[in-house]
Length: 427
Image 1 (cartoon, one colour):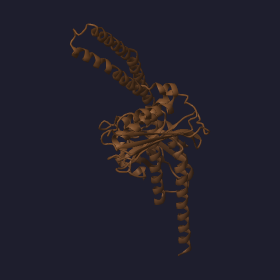
Image 2: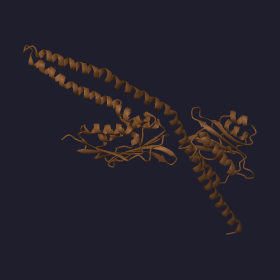
Image 3: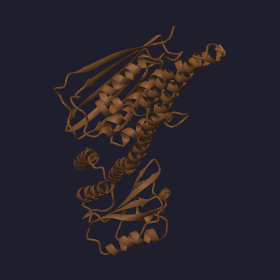
Image 4: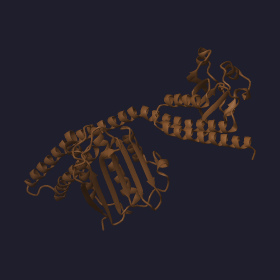
């Protein structure tokens, strides 16, 4: 191989490795950026620094209007006012890859880019959806880009698009979080109101009616047989059934807003709920026995915000109920941990059953065919900035895992708690 060819081969190899290192570093850097504006600014800086470009402009796509508005401008721009006032109306289908401005269709956008000394544009798109465009000016002392450079620019655009989409989803969740919070709080306030009304009004009336029926039956017994015995029997049946109605109302009130959660906290409420499940018969399709095991770590004290205790309680309870009524599992394992993960304080909840698993992917079931429990669980976790993940395959059971950040630290010295309850199907 001639000397000049060998030298060129080494030069190309060095440049290829340089591009790879830049791309890998860029990949790590933008993962730590959660703001779309910061991501685009960082892209502009990286392109200008490593390509020695005199001017870099970045436009952010506005899906409502279909135009591109200037987001960042680096370098000596002759007419920045023109760049700010000139929204690009390039059609996404014309921006399939990195290309020269001169290759664009004739139009005002092309003329405007040339007026700004932009020579090359890099589309930032994900699966056909245009998110932004980077415009590159002339390179200092160099001509057009090589094929390797164009491929690298396409890779940088794709990586940026992925980061932008992730940031956009995070921003959307951030906007939804107050709505989730308001919805959940309003729903829980209605639960509390109903429980209070049942206790203060309905149960009081039932108690009064029970006493009235007892008095009437006692008075009729003094009439020395002048009353049909059937009537006395009916009254006795009503009187004896009143305590059962009363007990059922108490169970409903505990389901609406359990007082043990308010008075004693999350762990006591979960153990109390497991006790109530152990007293109830299993569904006909369930195995003869379902064993529920609750393991708790780091819960040395109560949480500062009772709403967080409430939401974790209902997420756990819903996951257990789903397993009992849909999975038919021999075992349900519940693990709650409050502690440090890295630099963050995290409450993690895992509910794993050994049942039949879901027939479809969990995410496709959320909100469909009456699966509103999954919606409620997702909303409650999202309201605290947490994440809920569901993993299930037919025949391999289901795992629900939630992670919620919390400022209050857990207690690493707290005793490991465990509670086991067995639910049995009626024989």
